[in-house]
Image (cartoon, rainbow, N blue to C red; front, top):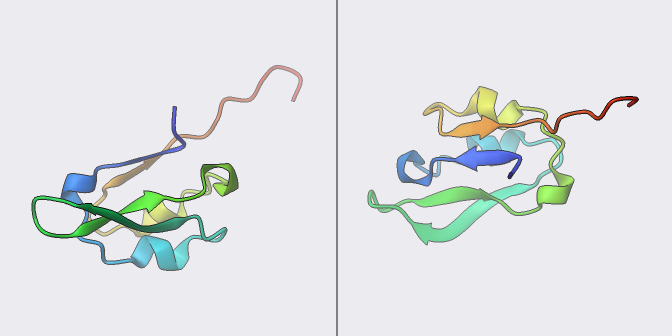
Length: 74
């Protein structure tokens, strides 16, 4: 499962999440949604630290963040 789920159809490409992402792993996609916007995408999944800033700053709530489950003993 991906660390982020982005509902591309509702993204307005405002860029707030890209600007506030600490590890800078978000970018604009080449895909265009039905409203004519290039949505955002996770460009570096390994670099994502699942901090949730993108989720917190998105004005349209199009991002969900899933933290990986910790294994016993970690």
